[in-house]
Amino acid sequence: MGNQKKTRVKQQYYIPLEVKEGTIITKEYENAPRQWAKIGNKMVRTILIPATKEQYEAYMRPEWKEDKRQQRLVEKRRRREMAQAEHREDKSVQGWDTAVSFELLCETEYGFPEKTREESLDEILEKEELLAALRRELAKLEALDRTILEMFSQGISEAAIGHKVGLSQKGVNKRKHRLLEQLQEQLKDYR
Image (cartoon, rainbow, N blue to C red):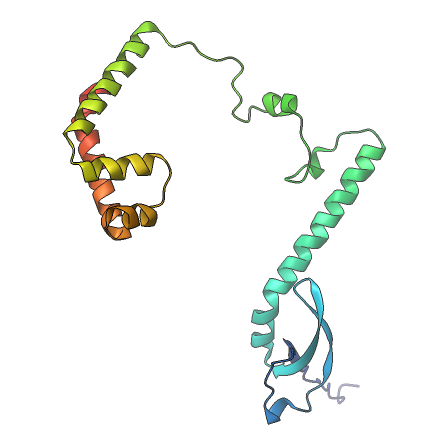
């Protein structure tokens, strides 16, 4: 018994390569085995390319990760449906795909304030002074700078602003940051 040698069969690894109409297959792989395989979420015709274990694992890791995520999602949905059928609430199966009531969100304090806070007269006056000072500072700027800040405040991209005013996106970015720093410095007394 002690003299028996264990023979280890080296496992061969293959990476599936999708074969489409325009796929060019070299002579080396003309006779490679062809089969249907799942790539992503669809079945496609593939040839199997020999690979090392490291190559195979590096190639297949994202596939395995996605398959595992799908399995967990299916299991979570199954458990949630069972809990709903039994008219019980199972917190372990609630996730991004679970409908949640507004009341439950309020109970768990997901950023929904219980009541709105009224601003005091002083806060309102401070805000008005700040806005008046901001308007004065904006009036002192060049027309190009005002245009950039106005378009930025409307959510327009830097590239689109640059196209409109004749600057590069990088130029708009630098100018915008310089202007915002300048305004912040000039309005620091109002904060």
